[in-house]
Figure 1 (cartoon, rainbow, N blue to C red):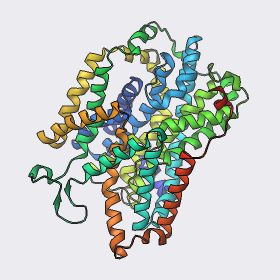
Figure 2: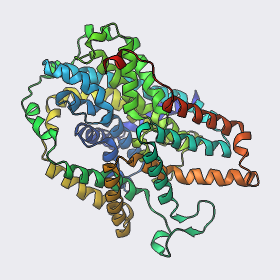
Figure 3: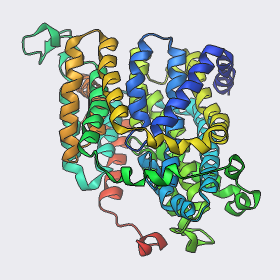
Figure 4: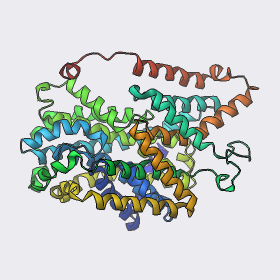
Length: 508
């Protein structure tokens, strides 16, 4: 309870106008990137990562949190208006929202998406603050063998979530782990895999990998698909005329959806967010499927269901709070965006772990406050003020947009490290990630392998040294055995268990 109260008092940091400016600015940036098809909050934070070198840690974390929440919410804008999800987590919103758009009720659909996002984001943040102290206490019970098994569990789940590309997920993850081994050994001050050059002794920084994998590769991908269907749908966007009062959902429609439906979707999103690698797409789909299977009006789904919009948006924004739990407690990102936020923490010298909450509550509280206030205030406020203009974002010429992104990415990679070599690595990793994406290799698995690889190696070697090289320590330690069994259970459920056929399966 004391920790929870300390987190609440830390909200006062947002009263500082400069910190508040970073929160609002981050929200606007996240809204822009989330609404633009092809751009994501991951890319936004990756491009702004060099800025964190020049500002204090509090405004940096506040900005990242607001970008995260805004990027998750704003994907519904183009999903509804032109049936092109701004973010993968808005795919189910596109199914229902665009149908309402075609019926002339697009503003109403955007209003329900914003309301669901607001409720889900607030509940997810409250659950994060309420249960994070408990998670911190439980994490203290995990010893070195258990930490290895936990990281292994995270990597396995990340790989098998996309069960159609498991082999490619393994390759991408192993490639990330291999890249992370370049430089100084994790346990001994000995350089390795530096190919006899001093440049590689210090290792490969996370910055060029992030910017290359998510910014440079995106520019190359968009350059290849210059004449995509988006260009043919812009006329729909330009012809829209929407009044601000149209965005407010009638109370009768909110009551028809029901408070329990919002709560259920929020808890589903939060729970899925805790799982490493699950992300907003899975949260939205699971919540949408649950809502549809138990709906009193299943015939509306696929034809413009407001209940479906609320379920998907409430879940994917609640996921934001859940995704911070494994990242802050164990250094295991819950989704790609928190993987970048983890980089911000590391850059600023903050080491995730159970003690982080006790020692750095004054730094974490403003970030959580930004997450909460972005959902509670900025989501409805931005829709009210900017709603009629949101759809015009997609009218920006792609040549101008992506040229600017390329310049910012390369300049940012240099400013972050002041190294021409690291900037060249950003280009190299960008080309590598581009070809990986062309062959359906996951760049997220590449990044998470790079981030978690050193921990996996360190805990493995430490655990073996504690038991004279005998690997049985992973089976005799209760915490390690628990996560190994959990890994097997998840692998079975995801890979081998056949889902029950419900209304969603029958329709599809």
